Length: 210
Image (cartoon, rainbow, N blue to C red; front, side):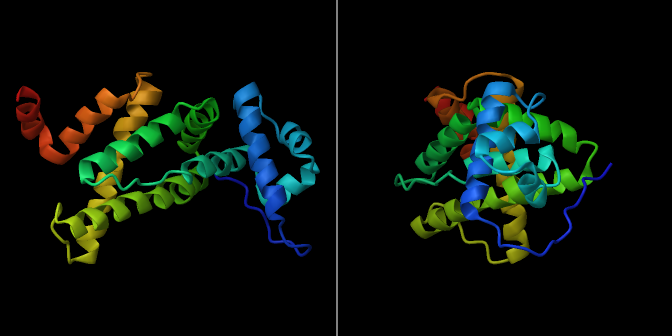
């Protein structure tokens, strides 16, 4: 099953203010109604725009929710706390805090479920959320390499594979912890996770035993 694609239409340029209002209204509706009861009509009313305005920008509810949730993750910043471990802990705590928001929790879980039977939606999630947030891994590795905490990686293709692997490990662990297991990713858990990520299973066990 494929998502409907919006055809390009002539007319006035898109309004950034209208886009922002629509995405904010979508997040508010997710909080109050949840994904299942959210409608484009309700979002349009909240945003103060015509329903046709939404359809000119988004082909359906799922795509709108992806973009509304993606804006939350765009707020993530990699802090410079002096060490790779501290930087990872800082950004993971931010990530967990966003996932704890009801609009992120209900929206992300719903569109991921829908994407299992919608290839176009899965690609939109990848492009709008996953690929955009890999910037944090790239920035963190470059900073750690500059500090001498990580060796340089000269092969661009290998470097890209490493970035993918790190992102999958971090995002997968935090999403599973907070959304699947419904446990908090608090400072203690994040500290332990960071040790496993950086030291491996044997190294983290030795560190915990010291």
